Structure formats: C-alpha cells, structure tokens
Amino acid sequence: MEKCYLNVPLNETGIQDHEYDTDMSNIYTVTLDIKEYDLLSDLFHEWNQKFDIIIDIFEDETLNAESCSEAMIILDNHINQNNNEDFRKAAQKLKLALSKAIQLNMPLFLDF
Image (cartoon, rainbow, N blue to C red; front, side):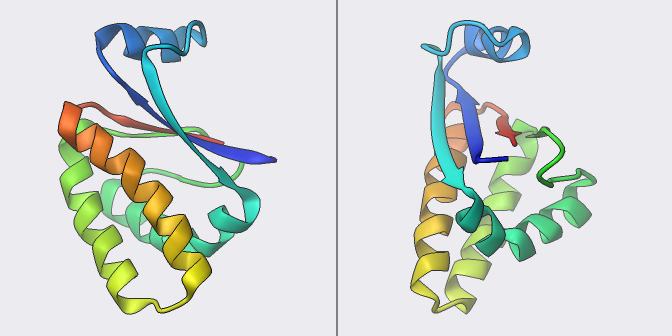
C-alpha cells in the first residue's frame, strides 16, 4: 500500500462510480500516505471496534453516512488528546473527508 484514499461520493452517481471504479468526477478524495495512516492507527482501531468494521492496509471499508457524525466526535477527541503535530495534520486531512461526508449525508469509503 502506497496511499490511502478517503473517498466521499458527491451524489448517487458517485456511489455507483465508486462501486464500479469508473469516473471519479463525482467523488471527493483525500489522500493519506502510509506514515499518516500509521499515525491514525489508534483512531482507526477505535472506529473498528465502535462501528464493527475492519480498517487496515489490506481492506477497503465503508463508514456509512449514519456513523459519520459519531466518527467525527471520536476523531475530535483524538485531536484534542494528541499534541503531535504530524498526527494533527493527518487527522485534519481525515476530518476534511469526514466533514464532506456529513455535509452531503454520504458514506466515507476508506480505500487502502
């Protein structure tokens, strides 16, 4: 794995485009590198437990629209408890994708 892609469909067409890996013009994408992924691993572990998903470098996973607000609360808690600047930068990238998903009431696709 070289990059992690946090994909948010902009509309229903974006959901289909993501499913069939076609046109990406209807998908908002934020990219994390492996170092950023590693910095966020404790957060992802907490999401795995809370939402019964498996975020790891060998799996693609979906955080459904209903879970995104709660995931944001967990993310904010991690940001508030961590003073590491590199962690905060990675977390802010994740927050961009999560905010877009909440705004549009869409899922967040975690493609690793």
